[in-house]
Length: 173
Image 1 (cartoon, one colour):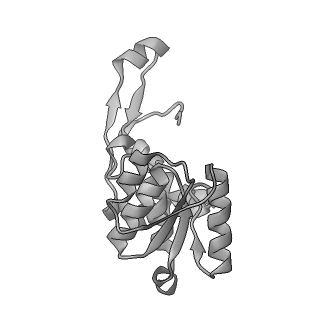
Image 2 (tube, one colour):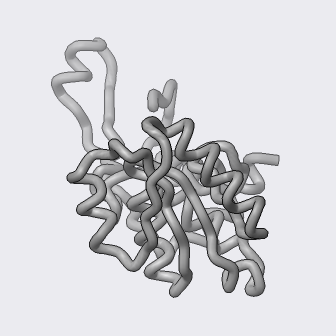
C-alpha cells in the first residue's frame, strides 16, 4: 500500500530533509486563470526531491544491509542525493556513470566520500552494468526510480502539500 509506505517514509526521513517552501506564482496563476503554487524542491539540501527517496531507501535497510556496500547508477540528481545520504549515514557506496558524464556533475560528486566508476556511453549501459556488478558481488543495488521505498520517500512531498494547501485540484510534476 503506497499510502502507508509514504506515511512511514515521512517519519523515517523527516530529520534528514528540509520541508521545502511553497511559493505562489502570480505569473502562472494569471496564465492558467487559476491559483498556482510551486513546491521549491530545488531548495532541498541536494537541490532536488531525490534526497527524499534515497534517504527512505537507505534508512529502510537492516543494520546488516547498511554495513554492505551499496551501488547505484546516475548522471545527476539521484547520484548527488545518494552520495549525500551515504555521507550522512556513514555508509560506503559506488555510483556508476557513463564514460561521457558531464564533468561538472562528476566534480560535484567528487566532493563526497563516494566511489565513482564509469561504464558505457549512456545511463542505460551504466545502470545495467551497475545492477550486474551488484548481483555478481552480492551487494545492494539501489534503483533511482524503480523501488517502492524510493517512490514512497519522494511521495512525502504530498504530505507537505496537504499541510500547506487547503484544496488541491491537481499536482503537476
